[in-house]
Image (tube, rainbow, N blue to C red; front, side, top):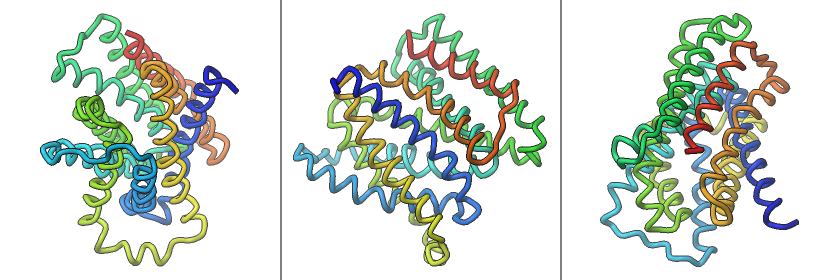
Length: 293
């Protein structure tokens, strides 16, 4: 298989695996609390990322002057990102969270325009408007779906997911300079290590009891999130980025909400309404417009 066909297939596979994470979290949070699940994901994944980092035999040292930026990356790209995201999934649905998380691209565009002075074109503006209109429609559609949403806590869950998307935007904007000056996989591994450490004050009081009561299915979910979503997903993503343009690769991320909607319908019977699908389409198209220009 040549590179032209392999890379797109690899990116589709990564998007499918990342979409599956929303379903894995949704079915596991009844057994493992969201914050503890996020910690266990990185407790398993981080040592493997460090091992891969050493095996790659590339420069791994990052100067201590970059520590403040790395701390921000650890907090926004790991700790807060997954605390917000997993709590958000617990209070909403897998499909809703997967669609709303796609707004991270919109937040990246806004923050890049504010702090990196990147051009804010008419098409980007239109994309942002369409995406946020889609967010409103998705939330309203799910609040009207009594088979899925049972209380106003759903709105809180949506807010947590949007905060998670905003965290990824901060991670992306702050990390942009580091990712151009240093190896991207190395920077990501540093973020994993620091982010795992930052989980400790939150999870230490209860994590021993949580671990003792995890079932086989619970551990399978943890390993799915750690090994496939984190280790394989990030390694494959950066390999693809080394072989193709970032803009081309980013387009494949639009498959994540589509895959998540399909998987959640099939596995956990979260059947989307027409209004929900309309909102999802607006978000995805808005994101596409911001990436295209």
